Length: 358
Image (tube, rainbow, N blue to C red; front, side, top):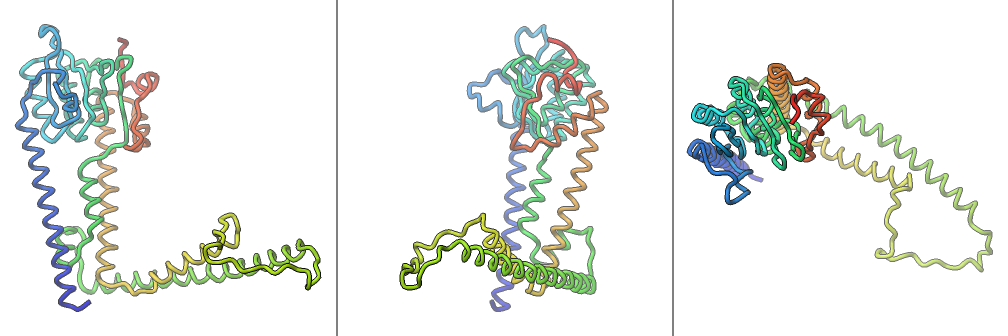
């Protein structure tokens, strides 16, 4: 590829990245605008039950207004803690009944603190679900009920910042200017890059050498096994006269049997082939693009680790404030989002999430 085409390609990639970023920002702004513009109080249940799982959080007065119970339902989005504060000031409820799939973690934590400041009771009624960030609103209740047949659904924490980092890792910087803009915490000079590239290539050469040693050992093992198999096969064949031995026709390509994955020789040969492919990749000398990709990935991973630690600390502080067992943090941190589950009644009691009988 000529230098002119390469420059145009890099310019296109950077422009595409900026366009996608601008589009994502516009969509987020639209979502935020919808959240802030939504009415506070609406009838419950909605005509379209799917609304229960959409943004933003909404509020409905339940039953007799003198009972001062409001339903808090919908998906939690940015700014909902302020809307929540306004709703409480308007109705002054005594109990919150929760039905929410969750949403923005930080908003859920803040709404939990507001709930505690107002000394409210929280409840998840029968057949209702309080999941993810909704858990923290519930735990803010001074008295907390999860009715029989209700769902208190938990999974490990996550937020939009992680998704932004995933996008960043999928599209590494294409120019030094873009790298400097995205990673200002990683200053560099031409000499720094040159030194780091030399080190990276040195490490790559070391990996090549290690792979070559592994290849040699594999080849010895393959030769030994093949020789052993040949001896065993010769010993098991019936002794036949040469003239009476039937002639075997070589199978066609279509008739060739698939490699036996249980055959140790075939497994070793497959491993050998994988190593040779890896060697081809490692044999290419690293350049500036490789440095930016590697360094950007390291910076993104470091940021994810830092964000995870900060989020865990924030949750631990909240649980302590609400007198919830810190064992709950270690429990739900081990539950992947794809495998979210309801806590059992004995678990709710054990973690002090539920603190009162129905």
